[in-house]
Image 1: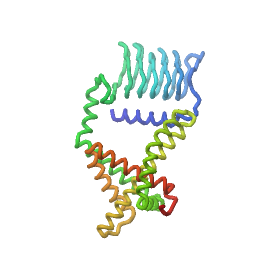
Image 2: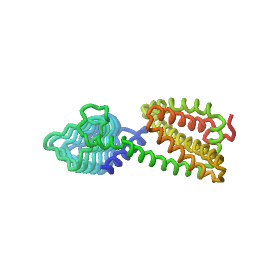
Image 3: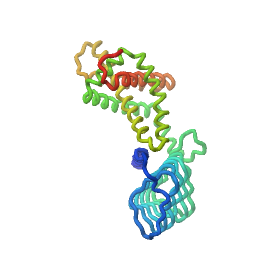
Image 4: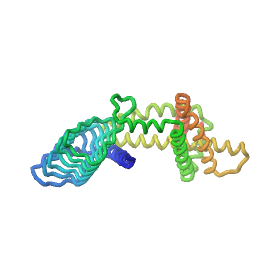
Length: 318
């Protein structure tokens, strides 16, 4: 089941990275029978795979209506976001759907599994699904039927599971922080210096960035032709967030080594600071409101120092 979700997430990321100014592959009317087509990316409108036609690959789409008629075949997976789907033919792979609706008619044959999130599905008697129907629903949704999935999610919300998750997260951040300062030592040291000298200004600028970036990115993504810019902006925001965490970790680690009168390398100082920061964030996670506020402040300070130092290209703070 975990492999199915990993495959689903991979397809969703692929879909969003392909949402640039790509021409629609919709409204395909073919007069040829027994025709084979390569993998398809669909955006909007209606796509119908007719009888005796075959997709020798995968289908991925956003906001589309996909119709697989009886006698048609898809040799790979189908991954859709916010779409409608009507299947009467054969699907040899998995079906991964996020939001939208699906209707499996009685002649439908699905060789793989159906993985769905916030999705409505109707299965007629006679439809054959060889794999599993894996359903994830948010706790706030009414009519939760798959109690087993919800129990698995709630299990991770218990203290033991949450601590394990936070420990893994902290170890990953330690590794990334050490890698960043190893590859970009001078810019990272400049960011840390900027952070120490301009912590209030950094917090203010970072707070504005946190508020503005999601809104601007969402607007660009919705604009279709500017969607690559929106995705790049979100990636830059993520990189800046992690880099800001590295800068804060270095400041904490440098103070720690100075208090303990130790002589550690910059990499060791970042690692020690990241461990301390990870432990603090793990403890604060048990205080939902306070933990969220503190994490938001630290994120804002890190982002602000990144912006003010222009990603470590400016040597001195204000």
